[in-house]
Image 1: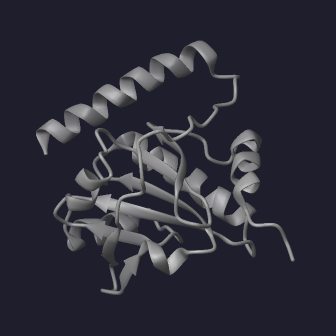
Image 2: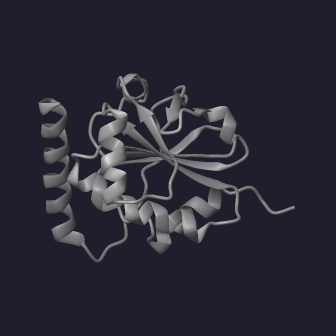
Length: 174
């Protein structure tokens, strides 16, 4: 936990320094070059099982976060704003909590209610499979389930440029 906290603090500090030098500039999502999409098989707080195949045909944003990670907490509202902006379209956001127990996540959600599906990677196995090295870490998948973009660190996901990137992956209306 201490090592993970250190990674979160380092990422947050670096992003804060980068943000201070170019805060007015909109972020661009880097293209994914890390290989095929790893599996994702986790449960939510109600015990329902979720897999990537459940979301086939939708653009999917997978965000890895923890309750103790300040940049993660700051970023969550913008993920909800992005989801709201694309309501009714084939798009979903999954907030994957890493290495924390149900009771801790539930206490956090009682204070900071989220409308996003919150999934639990209780053991960190999914985080390791996705090669997540810091938090928050976010992956944007196309409707076929392939990772197309990713971002490490806090980001305002409600920015127009990010919205356009997500929309570019949406299947054409029929």
